Amino acid sequence: MEFILSTTEAQLLIQFELNPSLELLAKTLHRDPTAISRQLKRISEKSDFLVKVSGRWKITETGVKFNQATKDYLLSQNKIVHNEIHLKIGSTREFCSRILASNYKTLVKELGVKSISIIALDGSIESALLSAHIDLAFDCEKPYSPDIRFKRIFKEPISPVISSKNFKQYQKITNFKELEDYPHILCERLAPESVSRKAFSARQIVAHTNDIAVSKELCLGSHGWALLPIYTIKNELKSKKLKVIGDLTYSYEKFGVWYLRERKGTEIFYERAIHWMEKNKDLMLNL
Image: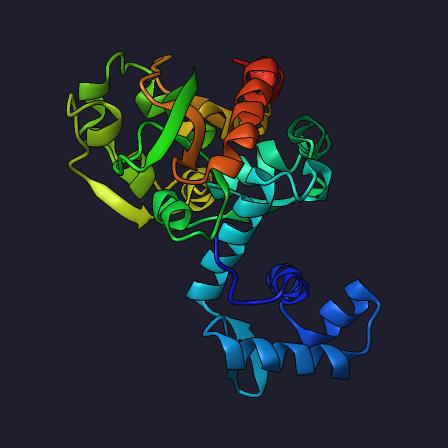
């Protein structure tokens, strides 16, 4: 790999991505902000990795990809030890908050890295992985791109739920088809047609969202029924604020780990993440 930057500049760029302000970067590195600013300016003159926006330095998409390549190269050449690595891990907002954040210490230990950034993504997790915004991903089902290697590890039970205040009118429902004409809160990631493999649909959509947490709150507000992963509503089921309709459950979706095949330096962390999930899946999700 041919480096455009010196080793010192490359390391500074990696640190800048993690600490994206001059003040924060200077504090992290215990250095003078003026000296760091001069170094960032030199990097911008030698490459298109940094630009100034409204007087502040910003890392570009090219800079993010360069950082990714730098880390992979250093790992492949054994020029950096794993416990000096900082990984960026992306997943859904619910999985990040309920699983990754609550098990942060065990995950860092299992991966053997210095630290991790937990990136909650509203959009495509696959796109974030392909564009180098994250190093590893936790998501369900299969990626579309053949450039992504993945392993599905456990089923994610998904059930139709309703507020306990409205449960009475749903008591006689025994199958999913009977739900089609009831008011539905549609979450894009959990569309009935997708979750059921087109076995049933929802004809009366009363609310539309792209976020599981919003879907849950709308359900708690008695606006309709929603399809939700069981692990995201454990507390609400326990307190009986929400109830599963007809004991119905889909378990087609499988959660697992994804990484970009070309990033050979990341493969070891992919394998460790798989081991972490396999070892802790019952503890994490109470499956």
